[in-house]
Length: 330
Image (cartoon, rainbow, N blue to C red; front, side):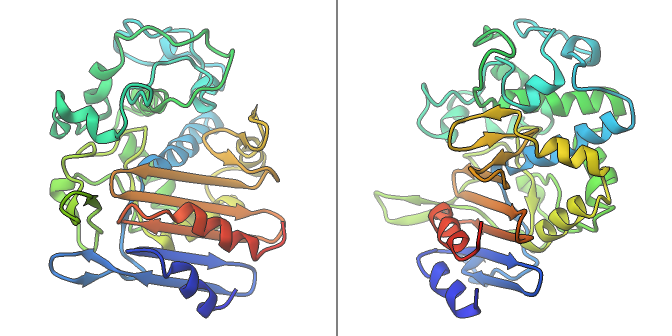
C-alpha cells in the first residue's frame, strides 16, 4: 500500500489516524483536529480514546497473572474478589469472563438502550472513576444464562476481570497494566485518563448533533474514567508497539500468546479468543465504539501486517479498515 492509497481511504473520514505496517514499510497518516474549536491538529503521537479496545489490554493483564501463578483460567469470581457479588454467580470462571460466555448481565443492554450515552441519564457519568463505581449498574441484575452455555458480549464481565486484577495485586487495574504492559513496551501515550484531567496531546472525541449539524465533545456521554470494560487512551504508534511486543513475546510467553489467539468460541464467520476477536482466517483484531469514538486494529498473521484506524469523530472506520485489508493477501 502507498501513501496515496491510504490518503484516498482516509478521505471520507472527518478526523483520526491510520497506521499500516508490514515487514518492509510503515505508513502513518493523521487527519483532522484533536481540538476542533482551537483547530489543533492530530499528529502521530496523539492519544485517542478507544472505547472497548481496552478489554484486550485487560485480557493480557489477566494472562500475565496466570503466567505468574496468581490465577488460572478455572479460577472463579468467588475465590478472588473481596466484595459481595449479590446476584452475580460466584462460580463464573476467568475463562468464561474472557470469552463472554459468563452470563453476567451487561450494564449496557443494547436491547433497552440505543446509545451508550443513555446510561448516564439517571446515573451521572462523573461518578465512574474506579471499576467498583460501575457495579451498581449490574450487580443486582439476574444472570442472563447459565455460565459457559453460550456467547453474549458483556462489558460487565470485563469490569469484573479488572476487579479481579485489583483484588490480587492490591492496586488499581490500570496501574498494574502500566507496570506489566505499557511500561515494558514503552507505550508512553497509553493510559486510563480521566476526561477532566487529560494529559497533553489527547484527542477530544466529538459527537455530531444531527439537528444542529454541529459537533460537541462526548464528555457527558461516556464514563469519566475507563474501567476493565474499556476507556483506555492510546496512540497509533503505541498500538504498533503493542502488536510487536506481543509477537516478540516481551510481555507474555509464546504459549500464552498462542492460547490468547486460539479460537475458544466459534461464531460462524468469525470467532473469539481470550479477550480478542478473530476474523474468518483466525487473524486477531480488537475494536471499540463509543459516542465520538471508533477504533479498529488487526494483525495479519501470514503477512505480519498490522492495520490500525482510530477516529475521534465517530467515523465509519470499519469499512475503511476492510478496504485496507483487501490490499493484503490473507
